[in-house]
Image 1 (cartoon, helix red, strand yellow):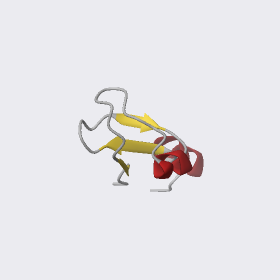
Image 2 (image 1 turned 180 degrees about the vertical axis):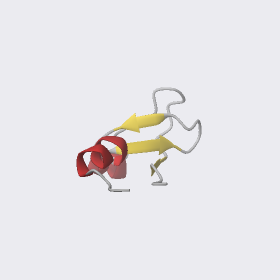
Image 3 (image 1 turned 30 degrees about the vertical axis):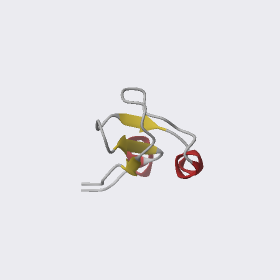
Image 4 (image 1 turned 90 degrees about the horizontal axis):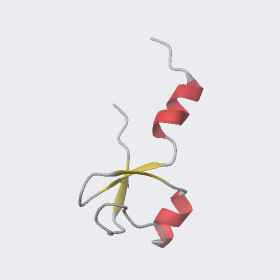
Length: 53
């Protein structure tokens, strides 16, 4: 099956998962690394990138 680049970017680019409550957050990776982004649900700032299947 062919992978469509536009669809891959829409699904995986700039999406992070909160390590505490598993909420999905779309944010700039530089802001994530600097700790400027907080989770909407729990308020923590620990994120991981979305895993590709």
